[in-house]
Image (cartoon, rainbow, N blue to C red; front, side, top):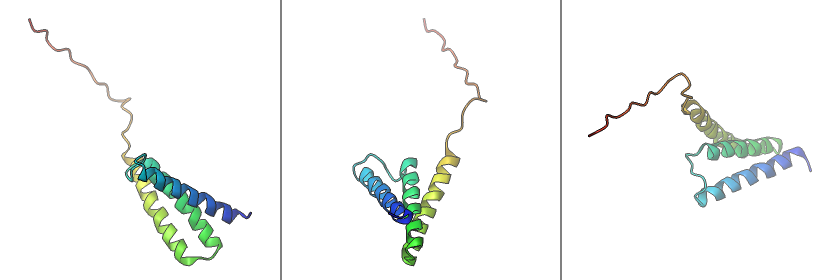
Length: 97
C-alpha cells in the first residue's frame, strides 16, 4: 500500500470517528478535540487528494483544514492562562454572634 492511500484511509477514519462522537454527544463542534481531529483528518485527505490529482477534493479538504486550523489557533490563544503571577487572598468572613 502506498503512503497517499494510507493517509487517505487515516483521514477518512479520523473524520468518521469525529462525526460518530459528535452524533453520540461525546464531542461538540465547540470542543478543541473536535477541531483538532477535524484538522488532522482533513489535512490527511488533502494530501491524498493532491497525490491522486483530485482538484475539487484538494479545495474541499484544504478549506476544511483551514477552518479547523483557525478554530484550533483561537482555542489555544483564548485558553485561560495560568494564574501563577496572581495571588488570590481569601478573606475571612466576620463571625456572626
